[in-house]
Image 1: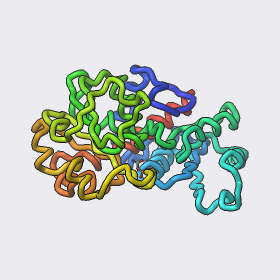
Image 2: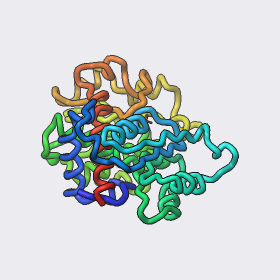
Image 3: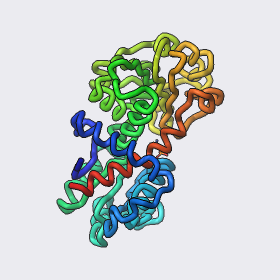
Image 4: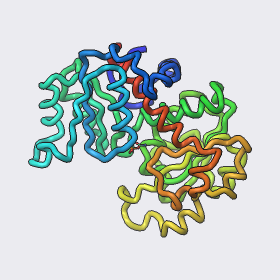
Length: 307
Ligand code: CP
């Protein structure tokens, strides 16, 4: 399995997506502390270039690269010459000139990542760690790996609900792309009308207005963070009314299939889109998603360096 870049799940064929998941599954023991693969990316240099905050994605990429033996340049945009006005492209080219082979990029600006790729040397690799509201491909992969571990390889039998702030969610876009590529049986989406995109993202999905109806009989309930920092005022009301209409609490979860799993990409707004009792309950796989993030990112790093 080889890829020059990973910019979007939509660029992957089903066999490539499955191969990445298979490799991540093989790597999961090494991902959580193994040292046996330290020679794999020896001599390679990986740099997280995060223009937006992150806990899970940045840390897990750094761990993944370290466990594969790459040099990791722990660059911090907040303490960089970006503060003096240096552009993102000049920042990338400066680090590239120091020998960085692969950039893991997070940006708030849709399109900025592709501009960085266009400005880089052809041999430099790029992995998308979240761009604007467009893509978060490694989150999509780790979500699919988590579903597969609990529900098996056959996605055609599954009923998956994605609920909440889909409009601003790159997690939802990458998840929807992956579910469609893997042939998911039914994808239901639910959230306030003001947070439903009208750009074709939801093509092929069943849009349900009432959350109780959306959750009924579901195998997987994927909750999304309400991204108030990306919103114009007035898109949603109070946190209390949002939780009342679209929050996942134990009563609603009881409407899903008895063995349904609950997912959330994090960070969670507890008490806004998800109740503590659900986030910390027996059906929650939220911290398994985090663990799977390390092995998925190892698999992706191996794939880009295999090209
Ligand atoms: N899920 C996710 O992208 O989390 P971070 O913002 O903490 O990386």
